[in-house]
Figure (cartoon, each protein chain N blue to C red):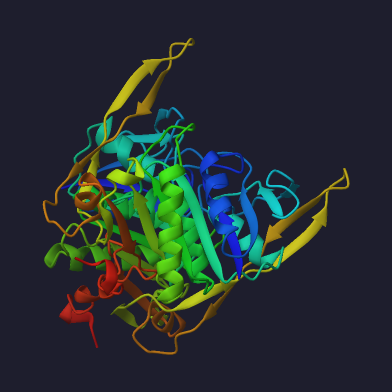
Length: 251
Length: 251
């Protein structure tokens, strides 16, 4: 099996190395990852900007790897379009930090998985609920292994990428896996205003997530109780129930 | 009525001015737009980077406006979080170029509308199928007016942003409006490899859209036949039919 590994924290991130190590147990691994951290890049792509690919020996001789000057979604496009990698499975992450609820829209990790799905590649994004660059991915690696085994035994269609979030707990305290839906919630944005040395204002965004969803079938509910959350994603943003909302124009 | 106008082509774009002009017919308009073009930024936000807001008189004394150093989604966050604008309606665009099918994932224009929906603001993104910076927005303005009137008469819920694409035709040749779903399709990525003056390779991405969807209820079908496409969007990426796919772990 050929496996393409991407991420959004950049080619040097510990979470990427942790994912590559597990992926190697399952097949031939190639890596295309951003040359620098790209958190919060959403599904950005580089328009009007040329892209570069730098071969990297960071994972040793057995794992061909490239650092890419673009976004996570660009990495997937260059992997298939330039490097002609034809993966049977795309793994993205392991992200340093959570990607539950609407974070999926902001996530570079998941944009790589969704981009994979656009190209017909079975794709899974993994995130650990620890934002530290020095996070311990030991337990997460065991979960990644378990999810890949489940996936290979009973795959999802290639247009249904998975968003896997892993609680930041020792493996013995992780209660199990749950299929979940995206919790309703929002970021309550707070901005800290500061004055630069030239007397001009600038703002730091310090959003705080606020759940609006008490139900027990959500990603947030599962994670708060020590479960791994596995949310199957869409690649179609159409809100079908509203396709007949304006009777006057529908003909 | 208070209307917030955003875009992704930047504060100086003609499409933004065209949208502001129509919005002024409906209420008090404020503008927060990127200080430079941000096409293809998807739902990127600025993490770990401070943001700036520059007051601008570009639309005259009646339209308070700010150029923002961030992405389209950042513009919405700063408009509500720093400037304390509490709009009744958010309009994004008019984008210089199409945003049908999976382009909605890559689109900065629509990320502003989706971000508005996250904040509970009724939101509409407009795109004209003309990528030129000198595009003629005359017919598009008439369509924007018609869509806003329809919306005010029969609003969508605030968590259902609209994606409006307008064919690049004289008004007399536009056949009408249609509620549509996102066409299935993909970008077939082609990369043009070049060598820089230092002997290093770089790549230009030149994607070509390929439809995989012949049906007559899609955005692409409508636009190809001269209709305005109005696609209601989701703010939840959960793929509900797959929530029970792995029986083994669902408990």
